[in-house]
Image (cartoon, rainbow, N blue to C red; front, top):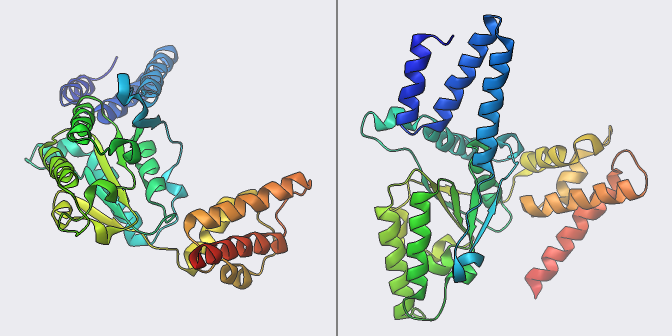
Length: 323
């Protein structure tokens, strides 16, 4: 039988709307029952907890009518160990996770956890992946807002869609990713701005400031200089992403190749070949090398093949910049 303190903790966590704390205590109860020789009861409790978590992770956000195409929902399986980022940046992501998991402690003192995050940096530097990590580690669904389908030229339509999205953010817990955010967050004083775009941005500023949900709102932009300055104070934290330095390029390649990593490799040459490439481009190059190795019935990636794939990505990037 669960202890009196465990029962009280379960009740408190339930009414404080803290599912992670509730799950933790429930598993503690299961461990207690197992230690008392009640193996069947412990097994049943663990199954109930796991089933509940799976149901929570599998929730899919569905819009009605014309809004059904606005959001892509998924259950990411990307652990934080997959992130290869500078220590400071990774620590700040871990702080977001820690505050979310311990939000009941902060609320008890009238404080709120970090839940409105702006991620800025060049394409392919880990912004979307970081959003997936947040969703996975918090066991929440990831809902990506399709900005290109959200913004329209018809007066009031974008604002109406934004209102419905923020209503759902309030109703359905999750991680909400506004990718390519500068499409609606652009500086209001820009010469090419129009009245409707200003109204849409003002509406977003109002909605995000008024939002008091427990969902995580993540806005990602490749062009932070284009964002309106008023946006920055609406976010609890601003995380800046950059192309990986040499030591992080090496760690990233090691992570991706994993068991396909050759036993002997000239890291100096490989790191040099990867210079100027983003996280995403290195990821693609490594996976291309793995696929070719598999098709050639090889157990590991040949260093020359890896260098060729990295060079191929680098050449494609340079050609893109020229054109």
